Image (cartoon, rainbow, N blue to C red; front, side):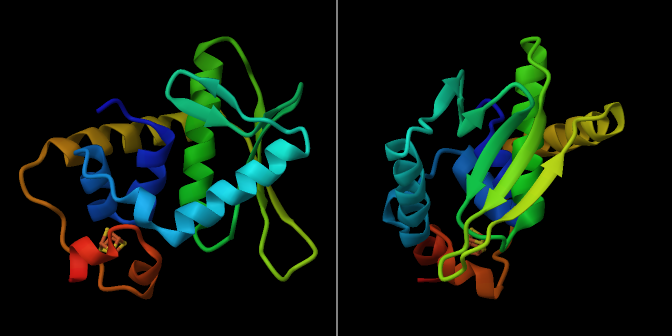
Length: 163
Ligand code: SF4
């Protein structure tokens, strides 16, 4: 599978999730968390912020300065950060240079947390290293072990991993 933003996100969230998704075991349709994420996207689309797709990536909003990605919670900022940096890299390869803006929309909270990201040479080198690590991970025979973490209960692969 070609490396995409979802794989990058999963790599930081859980190596096993990244491996399972990358080897095409897709359980996402069963996940409440994913359904909530989709609902947020749909609500944004109704307000006129329709998604833009380039190759295998979906972009929430592209302006002259920023590529904005909307996330439903700030539970895993690192995963969301590297996913957005990956999108910035894909845009850069097409001659579109942008900064990243991550917006976290937490339910029951009126404010919205925002993180600004920049794809510097140093950051891009680090991202390239992660892409290589993911390629190595996906090609290995053994499935990484379960995390045994509280975050597993919200994961689309929970039943696969624990039941
Ligand atoms: S349930 Fe836990 S161990 Fe299994 S893929 Fe999800 S996060 Fe990883």
